[in-house]
Length: 350
Image (tube, rainbow, N blue to C red; front, side, top):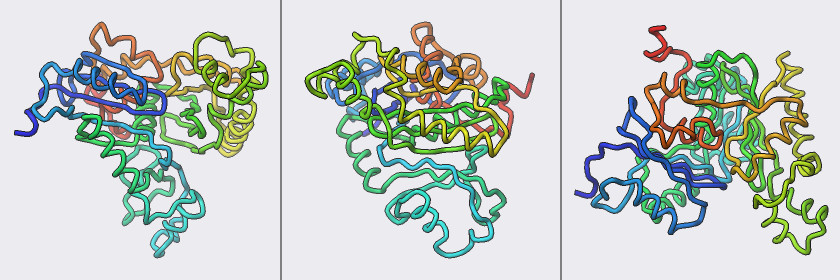
């Protein structure tokens, strides 16, 4: 038998910044998060070691069967208002993808979701115009699957991490009773994916062609370093306090974010009051504070403990810390299924 019958659950998130892994006491909630591991992206030896440590009993196949979330560079996660009168027209969705997102629909695998509750969009009914286009190039899916297999990871389920993170955040805000719109940032090397979410769903989305890489030349210039490689090493290390340089390093990114927030606030009459960056390594934690200060918002203090408990998920003592760290939120969100239109059984009894 290639795979043994699993009694534990395994979850893996692969992003530009880290590979996060977790083992749970069962495949489906209710369960306890028993162990977590983190390795640097690209460190294959460390990943193999982490996989070995997580498995109480090695699979006969040598693979770790897991639910996997990925953040491919060419991912498409965009909110859009459909023209319901044109929805039945042949080629309308292709036109939206080409003109609004600059992607060729035939080269992508795309799911159309409702922006409020994340459910599959019913094209036949076409009752809602606010949707999320979520997908990635077909060739990227194939290369990701092969890379996972090369790393001894067998995906039982493969998801776009951004989609799961946003769904989890919407559900988290609904559970906590929050009314404040939250700016969500996934800051990568060359792109920042920004979203505005509330307990009612994803309200806005925008990819910004500004990321961490654009900050490195500024570090080099301001500190008089001899080359960009030296500046990059310093920027990603924990040996220099960049807080004071925050406004300068984030100037171009902030301009784009202020434009997005301003447009949203004018359109809706609501003020964005909080910010969460979901993937930054601890060494770059100062960046969230710098952006929040410049935008006049407060960092969202995530505490997923009560939220996950209501979803049938608890933490062992050694894993309790991850429920408070934004960069682990995406992995935690991967563990449950969320439907904001129906109360969870644990909440229905309240």
